[in-house]
Image (cartoon, rainbow, N blue to C red; front, side, top):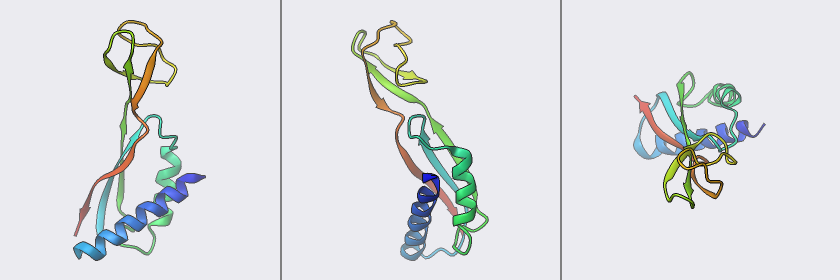
Length: 113
């Protein structure tokens, strides 16, 4: 379950931010996770709750913003949203697509006290 490691990384970022910016409590964390990032959001939510115990984000709400997959179609030249890496272009039906996004994962923002 690599979601536990992801949650531990998030905790590290939160703790570092708390030291640098002088806040004591985090009430909400918003994450952006791309469709192709390979993260099971339910497992990440559980891991987040467990890993945040004893730190500034204990009890914080986790909001996950799912980002779509995007690809450049070499046939029509458009950047399109795709649900699966092997999907054809939804505009022209072409099959020559280069993934351009959807594998990212980042903390968008945090609400702190």
